[in-house]
Amino acid sequence: MKVFILAPRENWICDRIALEWVRHNQEINTNSLEDADVLWLLAGWCWKQIPVHFLQSKKIIMTVHHIVPEKFNEEKLKEFLLRDQFVDAYHVPNEKTAVVVSSLTRKPVHTISYWYDAASWYAEDKYECREFLHLDPQKFIIGSFQRDTEGGTRNPKLEKGPDIFCEFLEKIKDDFDIHVLLGGWRREYIIDRLQSQRIEHTLMELASLEVLRKMYNSCDLYVISSRYEGGPQSVLEASTMKVPIISRDVGIASNVLSPKCIFDLPNHFEMPGDKEVEYNFENVKRLEINIHKQKYISIFEQVLR
Image (tube, rainbow, N blue to C red):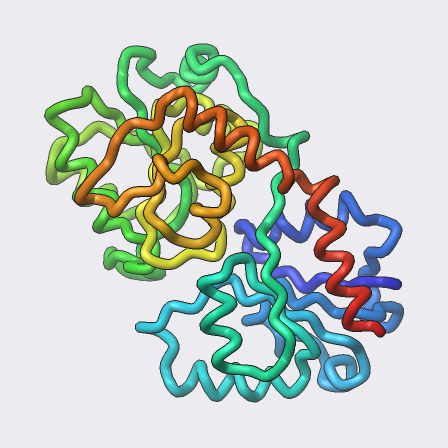
């Protein structure tokens, strides 16, 4: 069995997922559409890059990371249904997405969460990481590494919850000596809000993996304030590095994190304790790529039967 994975080539999370897959599955990976038995459309929005005769002649697995109802208009529905005629089975990372996709298709929908690579994500000394990144060792550092401003604007990408994140920060700023550590790109909306409230922040835009690992390890708290998510990967990464993390009930959060780490932000929050951090660490181990990849391979094998 040979699998071709379609990545978006946009220097973002799906490209990293694709690279990790290739690195850990050399024996079944192929870069040739001709040689592939299965085409894995990890970046389903790029599906038109695949010539039609390959879509018709190969087995097709498509990943749907998440669907934002407010943005799923008639045009997107038409594209979904057009593409659906070529798809043999769907992969989704969480049950919330599975419910939506199952309402749109009769094709099989497989729910398998993302993985993480333990070779990349591991704990380091907090204060050594802060020194490396020139961050104040005395501050209460809150992390958020994503993109959450609509492209070409300064408007919030509401599904990522940057407005909720800012409301949360504004509520706690008098109780904690906070410094906000931002990663990713398109963070203009949050930066505008932080500046208006005189909340200190540092942006490390499109950091390398090594720097991103040190950013996580510098945090006293990582916050996921999204309204909709496929993962996010930060659930896995923060958990395996024993970084305290809180999240709204989105994506895979409730499958990995302690129930005491799930909150209706910005209305309520408590700091995770050592028990919660350890719970997250032990629970996430099952999703390490060398263990978890077999579930993906099983989907490909099933579609070839």
